[in-house]
Image (cartoon, rainbow, N blue to C red; front, side, top):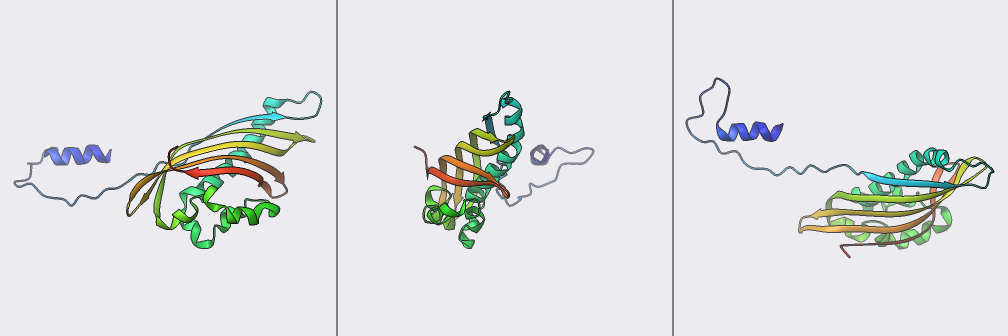
Length: 189
């Protein structure tokens, strides 16, 4: 709508008004609209119980996993200012036994050391496939294959951002936590 209005103004179109006598120069500013993160999650479920309804269980587990993975990608890639706090909001997403190792491998889990140069990340494709293990009627653990592509903008220009991870998650009292991972980041490749 704004673009149509600007195009009409630039063309000198108006309703019942005379076009301006002289062209007016308006300083041009580039406004970049960052599209929101849109994670596509495919979930399946497995359980030991007789007559386990895998489709129902997958539907039950999907909303919580979706929230967790969206939060992970947002904190790790879409909020470069997280680096200033030492990635605290990212590291609390890891189970205590792996948190220390994760803090030493931030470059493979997030923007890491590049975050200081990044002003904005424009999310592109974000996909996840999850297999959720149920026990006693509740989601207990999950294996998630996660991929994310985006474009990082900085004062020096733009470049691609890429994450490919396999996350092993545990579902505890406080929700999902990353218990183990194999992860790589980088540009196109």
